[in-house]
Length: 327
Image (cartoon, rainbow, N blue to C red; front, side):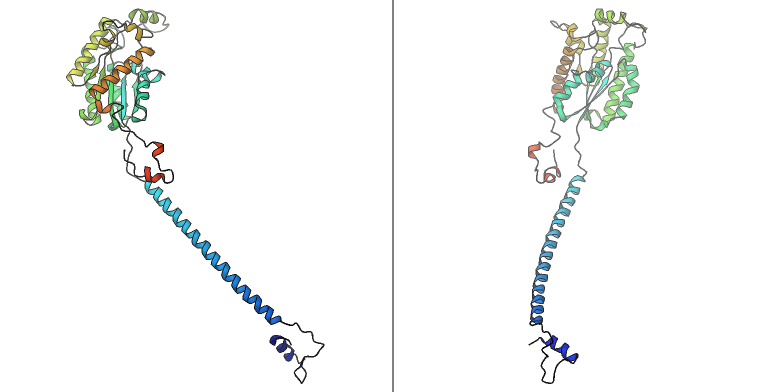
């Protein structure tokens, strides 16, 4: 027998005899329809399986995309915030005794920076050779260059150059020196938003080793050697203390501390005027003591940390820790 479809083809072509039998000469492919039917059945099952696998894969992809999208949104929310990690600042104004305090590897500002770590930012604004007359003009501009509302402590350290002998280009009369210091202190308080917003510390000029300084100045090939004496410098130190008292702020009286009984001030000076390593360590130590006593909330151990310890961060989901950071 042949399949119905094959038989229909033969009938249409007139190849069937009167008895309805197919001539022997006509080749017959037995079971053709059954084979095709089986293939169609198998193809249907295979297509269903592929479709199901595709649907499953698509669903998983969609879930993955949703998860990634949610994480992206969460990240953006965590990164987009009005929260501010404000690090309190400390600004130091003055002459070379301040400038070198930051530039020297063992300078007194450098030492404070190590003491505070990341709890406070240090801004050294000393300019070598300056006196209070020139500082009166430059300090307000230096203040404008800082986010001064974040400054919590400031030192004012002029006097070493003001106190050179009269007639020299850096010399400033003692009455003007006091007036300049007073104006500088008031300006810093105003810039900070009031005297309660900032801790101000005046620093007196230290004693001078006139003999060593004169030898250094004698070697100068240009300019007039400046003359300094401890008697004159001491008067300016007293004037500085008077300004601090009038404004009700603390003063670091280096002149008195370094000339106290049993203290050899020359050990603190390198060239007779500027601090050596020992002198910088002395200033840093005394200033830190004064900060702890006069402004306890500004001491290193009293200031809050400005970061989360890395072991406290959820490494699987950092935004959970850092996205809602409250210090």
